[in-house]
View 1: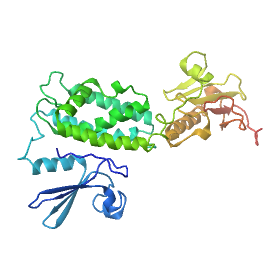
View 2 (view 1 turned 120 degrees about the vertical axis):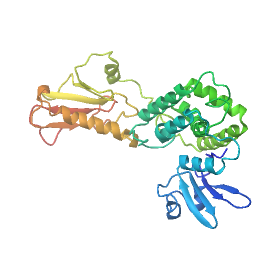
View 3 (view 1 turned 90 degrees about the vertical axis):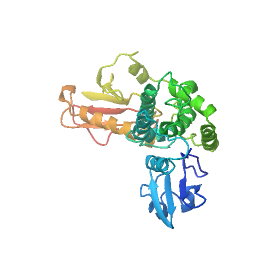
View 4 (view 1 turned 30 degrees about the horizontal axis):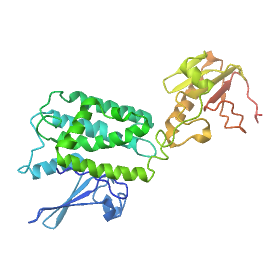
Length: 352
């Protein structure tokens, strides 16, 4: 199976494939560190994207670089078309599953192990992981229940199997770190295929063993210790704001978009006084707790606050004051980040 995704000692998920066509028909797999790393001039000269995998063909003393998994796989399928399975069964679902993976699922993998966002188009880990699970389910829906064989399309291995399998090793290992039950990390038909192909096809079993071993190395080196949602969790007790979000305590809500909630302060310090909070605290007890993972929600909170401060129906005039009290010395009373939006009168400076 010419689809290699081992993990190197420097934390890379796959390696350079150095391909030399000669009498021995040699294929050598090496870490990008042989060229100094992904961002060095020598590697960027081969792949300006600075990503992996990369296949370098050495034919008649000339080198040709081929980046991108799909391009490499299609080249190898053509080069070795007379050897082993075709990897291209007539069932068009093979190409569809591979396409769905490479376009929608693969780019989201970083949400399972990267320290900070963005994760593809998503600014929060939670949103990216929800989309990751959604895309797995879309692929799961394409798999037949009564297929005759261990592979996604039945008895013949295809590019879909080779494409999806390494990512499912990641998902099975990493999603439980974020609170997903181990038996629910993969959708049911994918889970059944994953277990079966790993046991019945020794090549898939070998890939699983190699990738899993490397991921366990990541784990022992503390890869997830500082990642919010995995090694870092919000264990602070619930506050009055959580009860308002849950609907257990009534509030005069003026904005709710699923991420940000705004409501009138019950003890107003100005004719117009609103509180803007994140609906999911996610460790944001105080502004000093903010991390790069909070950039998107902080931006949304400021946008909501600014828009509400322009609403004359809420009592605001020409301008408003936005206040964040941070911790004890800042006068913070509720350990759940919130923005005070005050207006309806002339504000004085300096404040108290």
